[in-house]
Every structure is written in structure tokens, then in C-alpha cells.
Image 1 (tube, helix red, strand yellow):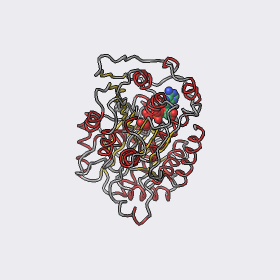
Image 2 (cartoon, rainbow, N blue to C red):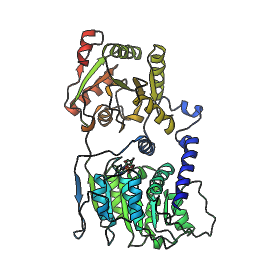
Image 3 (cartoon, rainbow, N blue to C red):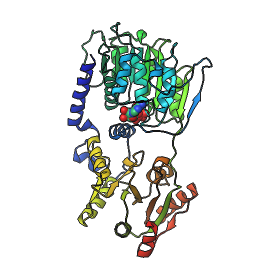
Length: 466
Ligand SMILES: Nc1ncnc2c1ncn2[C@@H]1O[C@H](COP(=O)(O)OP(=O)(O)OP(=O)(O)O)[C@@H](O)[C@H]1O
């Protein structure tokens, strides 16, 4: 029953909250040794965090690129949900979720996903553009609820992401009480010998492989739809790729395959092509970040203490909205926040040891303007736009494992997309010949001047804020 799903999703949500989503929660003794290594984001955590804190759809003005592999494909797009001829109760569910019209990826993907005969699809569009809702609608539309066996499998890379997808499915199927969903994730146990009767199974590859292939709890040859969600995160996780391939091998050739991903590099594409025969490929072009509206500076410092003084000078003189300061390690982030707090600045810290719930809480406070400064590490370098941030400080320059300039991370930290295209200021604190080299490399990579700023000269500092 859909109500039961809803209840299930709620229970899971509560237990997730209680468990702090179980992410990155390590005892102090274990975090100590990682404090000094570069802090980095894990793609599964980032994806989950973004899903949870995102307040709505990321609307894109950019175009969809369509690569039609199947010349007979009836590729067209719809501007309304009505035009998709969804089952009336599904349409009711869509509207009950507050969706008035399909998003760009939905308007292009859904007609193909729902067409007969079923078509295979590889779809890519950036996070938040409505991919989940697209494939969930397709999954729900293909279920024949008069037949009590699994017909749709959806693979997610982690427990938490599977639950998120299940929650969307439960909401969308609110008015389809006959459709039953099951989670194949850790903690869900089914006695051996059971024949699963639910129509849709959403889960992680290991559990799905156990239930479907190892223990034969459902008939793989009856699966009509196979969805691979977050393919880019999936292949990042050890062993998941192999498990997906093993599951995939047991599916009938008539099974409709859908593959969704936010990024599309060669590894993702190779994986996709291994799994999906003759796909229709659609890609929503990504809104690129750029440094066009950003004034970039560097400040010469001799030590960490001098870097700290530079921050205080900058902070005191220019009237800014809010600032984000990036550090390389959790230890530096902790040191800096303690020092600033002692000096009476109200600062927030966001680094890798926080659980997803704690990260959301920190970001919510910052967005609400309760703190003016957010000190963070590379856990936040990507994807989280806080509109009112006008100043970004690189307390430590972004560098890769070989201590070379990490230009991509620099762009993610400083750059803005068209949506948040307001002018901004970036200040790089340089305390060694090596960091100066990194700064130069970044300057030449982007072909944009990074100017020297004399931090002792109040007039000069005032000018940058003008
Ligand atoms: N047609 C729509 N109208 C309004 N809101 C929508 C629509 N489709 C999706 N949304 C909302 O937009 C947000 C992002 O959608 P969704 O989670 O499906 O994106 P996604 O592309 O799957 O993201 P990710 O890559 O993180 O999985 C969600 O809050 C969802 O409820």
C-alpha cells in the first residue's frame, strides 16, 4: 500500500535522523589522524547533502543535447504532464507534490521513457534538475499491479540514496495504493525461500544481487524496467560496478534500461555503454561556472599568523555580505575558527567530520545570515551556492596530491554560474614560494589577472569592495 510506503519512508527518515545518517560519524580518536590530511568530499555524501538541502528545482535555460541512436525513436518533448497520458492517479500524485510542469530533462526524457515499445536511455543532467522524478514516474507507469511479482529494479549507490529515491516514489504513488515497493538495503531481511511480491525494488547492488541472483527471491527474467541511478557515484564505489554488471546479465533482453547520472566522463560513459544496448542519449548541457565577474587578488604573508591578520584586516575594512574561507585540512579550519571566535567574530565551521545532519544545520544558519563567515574545506568546494556570499578567501590554495595547482577546485570555490552571476571578490593568501607558484599557475590557466593586494593599506582594501 502506498500509505505503508509513506509510513515506511517516514520511519526510515526518523531513524536516519537519529542515526545522524551514519555518515562520517567516527569516534574522536579516529578523526584525529585525518585532521591533518586534506579534507575532501565523498561523492555519495555530497550527492545526499545536496538532495536534502536543495529547496527546489534547478531550472536551466540551457539546451538539451540529444543523440539519437535509434532512428525510429519518437523523440519529442512535452510541456505539460497531461500530455504524457499518465495514469490519472499518478498525475494526481505529481500535482500533489507541487509539480506544475515538467522540468527540462523531464520534458525530453519522459515521452521516450513512456513510449512503446520501451526504449533504453542514458540521461545526464546536473544535480537537482529533476532526474529522480523522471525515472520514478517511468518506473511507476510500467508496473502492472495485478501481477504480484517484482517488475522494476532500481539500483542506487548507497543506503541513504536508495531511501531518498524510495521516498520520491512513495510520494508520487500516494494515489496508487496497489503499487508495492520494497527496499533492498542493509537492515532489510527477508527469510530464505520467500518469494518477494512487491512490484518495485529499490536498493543497493549487493543486496539486490543476493535477493535476485543468489537466493532467487524473485524472477529476474520478469523484470521489465532496470534503472541505474547516480551512475557516477556508483562507479566511484568499490565493487558496485561488478555487482551491477552481474545483475544486469540476468535481465531479459526485453528489459528497458535507464541510466541516470549527473556527470558524464569517460568512465561513466564506458560503464553505461557496457550496460545499455542501443540507448537514446540525452544530456542537459551544464551551466558552466566562470570567473568573469570575480575580482581576484593575492596577499603576501609570511606565516599562518600573518594570514590570520590579513583576514582580520580584510574583514574589518570592507563592508561585505558574507564570506567563505577555504582551508586545506580540518585542523587548520578548527584552528582558524577558534582564533576568530576568540576575537569576537561569529563564524561557522563545516568540515568532513560532521554528519550530513550537522552539515545541513551549519548551512541553514549561514544561509539565514546568523554567521557572516563560514570556514570550510574541500567538502564544500562543489555545488553549494549561497547567493549572498561576496567574498571567498583561500586561506590555503587548492592543490592536488602532488601539490600542484588544482584549477578545477579553484573554479568551484570561486566561480559563479549565470544564476548567481553577481560580482564577487576572491582573495588568495600566499605564504611560500610554492603557493606563489600555484597562484601563478591558476592565473595563467584561466588567463585572468590575480592582483597583488597590500593588506596594510586600508585605502587599497576599501577600493576592492567598491
Ligand atoms: N517538474 C518539477 N516541478 C517542480 N519541482 C520539481 C520537478 N521535478 C523535480 N522537482 C523538485 O526538484 C528537486 C530536484 O529534483 P530531483 O531530486 O529529481 O533532481 P535530480 O536531478 O534527481 O538530482 P540528483 O542528481 O541530486 O539526484 C526536488 O526537490 C524535486 O522535488
